[in-house]
Image 1 (cartoon, helix red, strand yellow):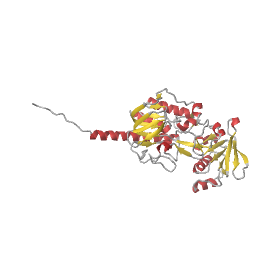
Image 2 (cartoon, one colour; image 1 turned 180 degrees about the horizontal axis):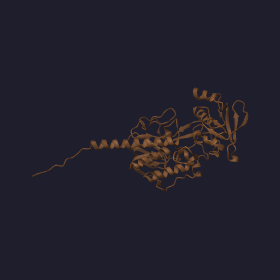
Image 3 (cartoon, one colour; image 1 turned 90 degrees about the horizontal axis):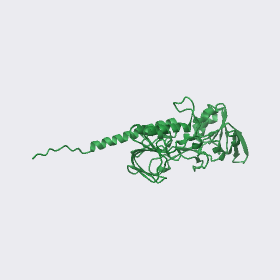
Length: 367
């Protein structure tokens, strides 16, 4: 789940949402087995993993325990999207809630303890045309990999409002499954009109007193079956042809509602709510692989037979592939799968080479 914060237009937003990793306590450094490198050629690795969210670090743990000394390139958002999440209550193994940054730091330390090499770098160029694969980073470093696991994640699209950034994790969320529990019995707002927004809204109706969906058009873009479910749900109401201009109230440090503007008559009004869920979609962090890997219409990496991509030796795991679940636990599971697929790929290749190697019987020379 790594990547930068994106606006509705798909472009990066310069907001303090990007800085929350430091605020919440996760700050990558060169300690505990992690390292930095500048302008080096790293040599050939058995496994390189791109991304350091749950998928990438789980893949690293499995690869390291197979004595493959995997290299994790952390990416531009070390720890992935969980580093901008506060309490995590749906990841198994924790009796009490654990903060996202704390969870990711624990995963990182575990990966390093079992033999993972972690570097603070991210790739800006890849060549997957032949093996070993060649990766070049924004720091000028070159890496070579016999196998590659891509776990660069997907980034939630945001509105780009300063108030949105200021109230992130204080009432503003991009994940109803993650955070809806905290709004039980309260009134909330969902922004968007596609399948993502409707799915989030319907989920929230199970927990919340009411769910108001705000959409800039006069009808939902969601599939008919999803739209029908939403329209028939007694807990849902709709505000059409409107955009959110500000999320209230930054001065109080918590969400109290939103200020909206009607696009047809320019009327401005306020809608009270305890929470705001941004549901205008996600964008997979796959631009690096366009033209080299098979991507679906939305840019997600296509996999078959486990986590295998169309190029032998390249695997994908987590939100970079997952268009349905997008949870930390499912990303971790896919990371495990990708690592096991990569391990078996290397084992099969080694067995083939060993079988094909010529054997030379000793020759007894007599005179």
